Image (cartoon, rainbow, N blue to C red):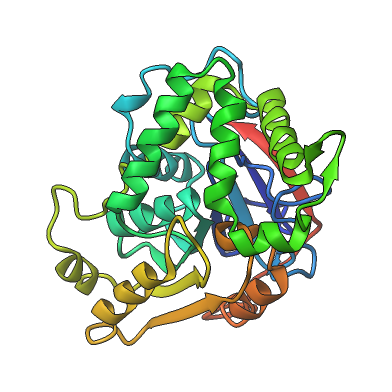
Length: 322
């Protein structure tokens, strides 16, 4: 059983307002808005993804260990793929009686799931917004997943050590140098203490089985697997595709996203490419909210039905089980 949260101003019927599906990243969860939401700067009342105008749904990836029975963890993690997760999310939407999405959006692993959600149901998604991600796993990504998997299966402190290694992929040398300036504290370099704290924090709120699964999913990204080639596959969809890269991303590099844009531009008029400028690398999609908002604002203007505006009623935020 999985859980999801939804945020909307429509309390009469879920999905009466246009639906936005938000997918979380590797260590994220369905808590996307509100005081502790990881994308609270973008999602909420009168924010970029405005819950006065949209129904926002966020599922937990099964096995992520958040807000579910602790027995509902996945240990045979290598049996699952991003396509499996996309299928589970579509089944969740079906049970909620939601047939179409105004948008599906996500960063990193969440963006890869967004690619798969759109590819599997190309006529049911109006806007695909993958951020700091790709439609396939590159050799570089697969190599890093392998190193992470080795740490998670062999280290005495697997979560903490894997997290410390991952932070070197999520940030950049420039980001570290600007922040720490080779300063020392408590007998260590400040960067060493920072890495230690990140490892300890994740260890206190994340499960080993969850980390193994989420990490493994990254190497299973491929919307063309057992389908046709990428160009032929995307020719079939009318979905508006909004590609968003980070110029300093070392995990899903900007040149990958730009290559995708160049492949699709001759055959799709409704595709755009945007680039976040940041020294913070991959994590910029969790940091550079002003830039991200300026990119997303035109997409999330108040939509209209044929007979007028969608009806808006008092705000509601719920967590439910499927």
